[in-house]
Length: 261
Image (cartoon, rainbow, N blue to C red; front, side):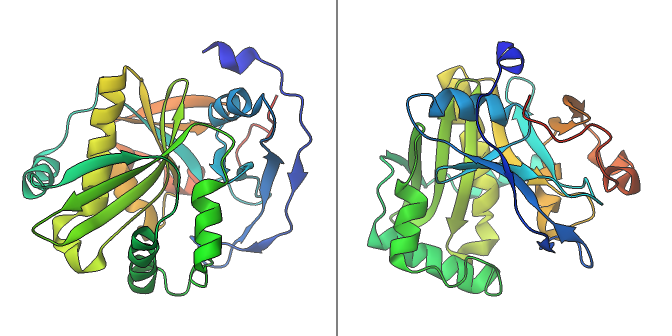
């Protein structure tokens, strides 16, 4: 992609170390910059190709001195085929209706978000977010963003939602959440499969899933969407058997320095 050769003129910062939420006993820190002005979309596209993620008006990526386990992953949608279990998920959710919305927070979305956090991430950093902070997460964007809602009349309206960025080379699932009492329907899996379909329909080659952390049970689900590509050593590498990758080696610091250039 030509984006890899584009220079980035921005100021980058490092956060202080703090406990890693994925691997016990480890510390994390992040490299980040702000996305502002007329060049925000191009910069976000370029940084995404180098393992960065967006949160509101910030692009960041892990920059841990003792660990390199957080790997940005993406699905090449042209070569992806759902597994048998994933096809069962699609069948179980055949009554779900997708609605594409502008990035504008609603009370219904917030209630769903609170129920999801209370069930899945009660001790996480987002657990205390109030409706104003939730609205900021949804609405404070300097790139092309949509909220993809999933409704089911039989289940009672809004059952899942995803904050999604539309980039030059794909879709990026920024944050998704769903009704915890419908866990048996695997709504998280359904949203990923549906985003693959959206990307295909739009002619976009990739679906970005965020960070996969080998050795972390929280992130195991991302390894079930194969083949996928992961960013390490300054390049995207493809695998269709992530269970065969050397976890201990991947958890070591990336041999390529973290750099946006």
